[in-house]
Length: 221
Ligand code: C5P
Image 1 (cartoon, rainbow, N blue to C red):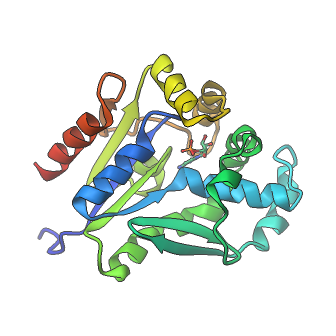
Image 2 (cartoon, helix red, strand yellow):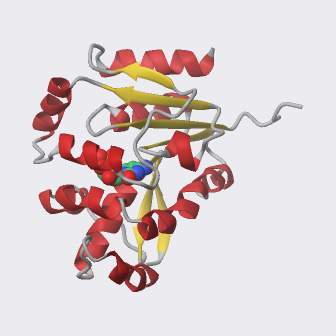
C-alpha cells in the first residue's frame, strides 16, 4: 500500500558551488517544504570545534569536545538551522575563510559524521511534527547515499569549474572549492558521490529559475 501522507523527502547532493543551496531554498519555497542545509551543519560544528581549540589533525581529542556540544533546531521561515548549546552562529562566522579552510578536514573525521548522523535523520520528524510542511528538502554530500538513501527524490547537481568559481567570486567568498571537493570525494566515510539511481542535473548552462523549474517538474510529474 502506498504512503497515505503527501510528505516527501528530497535529497540534493553535489560539490561546492554547484547551486545546491539556492536551488533547494527555491524548491522549498515553491513546494512548501522544510529546507535543511547540512553543509551549514558541518560549518557550525567546525566553528564550534575551532572555538573549543580542536584541531582536525588530532581526531582523538575531538570526542570529549563533541560531548560538550548540545544540538538543537531553530526554524526560521522554511529553513531549519542547527543550534549548538542553544545558539545559531551568524553566517559570517560559519562562512569565514578559517571555516572554509577547515570544514572538509573535520567532515572527514568519523566521530564528527557519527555525531551528526542521527540529528540529520531526525529532521524528517521535526518537519512532520511542525505541521506546516509538505516534506523535507535536505542538501549536502551524502544525503541520497547515507542519510536518506530511500528518499522519494534524489538529485545530484554538478557544474563546470569556471561556473562554480564565478559563483563563489560573486558571493565575495575566499573558498578553495576544488580542494574541498577533492577531500570530500576521497574521504573514507560517506564520500561525495552521485548515489546510484539519483538524477544528475548540470546546473552550469541553466539560470537558477531553469534548474528549479526542471527539478519541480520532475518532483510533480
Ligand atoms: O555545502 P557546503 O559547501 O557549505 O559544505 C561545507 C563542507 O561540509 C563540505 O565541503 C563538506 O566537507 C562538508 N559536508 C559533508 N557532508 C554533507 C554536507 C557538507 O561532508 N552532507
